[in-house]
Length: 291
Ligand code: NDP
Image (cartoon, rainbow, N blue to C red; front, side, top):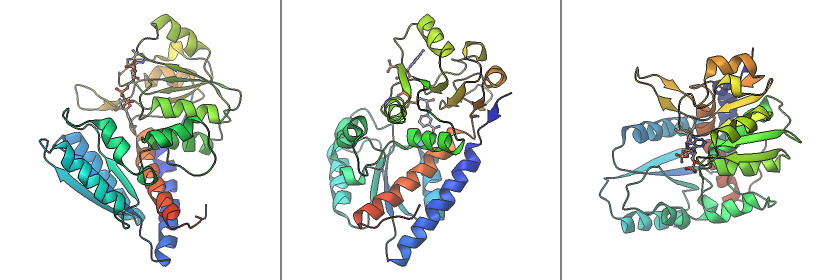
């Protein structure tokens, strides 16, 4: 039976550590500032943003949400981002996804100052990640949170076969880059990966990270014995409950370790967002954080 990786507990430890760092900054008169732009009235996005705000306040991060109706013009949002880029009280800016179709998300990502790009979506930060540059730069919070989890579980990645399923800019692509930085041999599968190829890849993977958004995509019978399985997917079933992309019951029989949904990757994402916000604040004030 697999060890269940307790994302909630690991996230709590991280949030507590971040709160200590934020309190240290406060003694120097610095309160990390996070600006969240929320466009439209998507109920799921509203819940995510409320959770982020709540977690931020608890950690000593000053979070403010700027709300726009779905018909806001692109130029209004871009102007606001430029204003926030210049605001010394704001260290981190994020625009909650999804944005309405008339707003160019790439332009939004490229307008955020790379030093305030808390989601790590600016091409400059993605370039640094892919080039494995030294120095500090923000990295997408979900994959970074997964790396924190793997480190917490003392899972050594060097030389391991790692398979990432899904190649979004939010999860799959930065995950690929982080795993190869950790010296794993990484494969990235996606929609065009034939299912028999996916089965071969799964059978050979020591570490599997799935971020697709399809309940039951991966069954335990497809996994290698002793694999580490990280399920990023969040899918709502007809009865209202949440489930991941991996069939938990069958995977648990085969895997060495597995994350549950909910209670796995999700809590790590918010905790890592706060971690990145505090780091950006420290960067802006050229202060070294104690780890
Ligand atoms: P996207 O829809 O942006 O990307 C999904 C990826 O899955 C795409 O790269 C797509 O390939 C690939 N894909 C689709 N079908 C298949 C298939 N049959 N086999 C292999 N790959 C496939 O989603 P996100 O990355 O934003 O999110 C993925 C899931 O993770 C969602 O359920 C989301 O809710 C969840 N999520 C959870 C987070 C958390 O904190 N727990 C945070 C972020 C996301 P292609 O590129 O070819 O289209």
